[in-house]
Image (cartoon, rainbow, N blue to C red; front, side, top):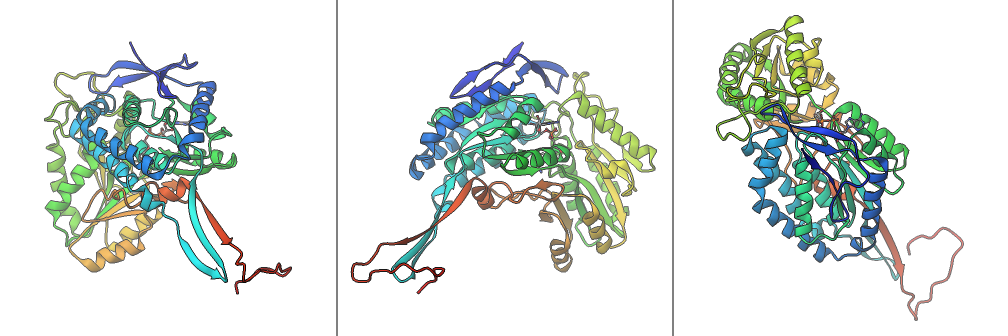
Length: 498
Ligand code: NAD
């Protein structure tokens, strides 16, 4: 059985770990490897390596840091296919989809290549007589990332390229369900010339996470995962004095107005609901059909859901792969059953899908549930699987009330041909990322990514300008070089400009 280790101080190591967790091949249902689960002392070792590396990396010039990022960007492009196959084999998503997440993550490295501009300070000449003032930002020290299974490359890339380009060192605790991609990325950093200890990977479970959250040697924690854990991570890390951003779960609604191009909307909703088997934090899981849109939309969605090609992620013919674990499969089938029991109309039922040649795989087909209400569990819970529910409402105002009352606020979309409705929606909806005729509005890397309400705890969103703010702290210098002809007298009253 292959054992997946940690990456500390520039090489793989088992450190002091003996506990393990299984890593599945979701397409076959068989265990393909085991991953080591770190003990608190292993986290200490990683933080010690990162602290040591920070002593020099924090002083490395912006141009040298930029050159590492340029090389990293090239390596991520060169090894895209290999990395995508690693992701597909442990996560289950199709290889083309895995390539997509690598490309979107690489865009953060591209943004980090411009760190000299992003970190540029400000200078004001002569703010008072013979006095100048200027600002600059400095790294925090050792930063940590704790990441979910669903984007094993992209979500960590939201964090570490910027943290490192800003002069910090990094300890990543990836998901224990698909850990191999992070070790591959660590090797790429080494090949890009990043000094040992700047980027470290500690595999593990709650024991590793809790040690990170309490660790006095860690200055900041970025977390992405489910809402209960995000809230816990935020509160515990903040209580130990850390800067923290914790992104949580989602229930993303797409409003379809009767004036929308319904065929276009149905195509895009189908891809956004069932791509990656619905295991995306920006997946559309609720279609809000307004007025006459409902009767026309549901048959189109049903036809397209039935046509989705479900199969192993490594098969180029597949559009949707299996779920990540047997527990995820059970959760999704139970969600469909509860919708059925609570009065929803199950239009397409993916529960009994069988994929030829893969009887043990964690496959569930696309499911479409109509006439769902906000009191049903299948609406209230984050299902995180290939289940699209349709809630019918009478007006855009009712759609807005529904979305704004939902505790999640990650992403949302509106399909319409009416600019006034779209503008009203974008201004009144209480959600962080909004698509207008775009179902998955994941911001480009030079913007920042983040939700509202229970989808994000903390102040700053990830990557882009807010990422730079998160991974640095500002200084303001007020400076006077006394002028021989204009001596300055000390004053006991509070200093004012003159
Ligand atoms: P998860 O919350 O189970 O795990 C996330 C991380 O937390 C993992 O590294 C895991 O090891 C750790 N963890 C799990 N349980 C823990 C505990 N009790 N104590 C301490 N640490 C713990 O999430 P997941 O199942 O890996 O990922 C799916 C979830 O992530 C979904 O809810 C999805 O919406 C969310 N997600 C959100 C975003 C976003 O940008 N908001 C992006 C991707 C995924």
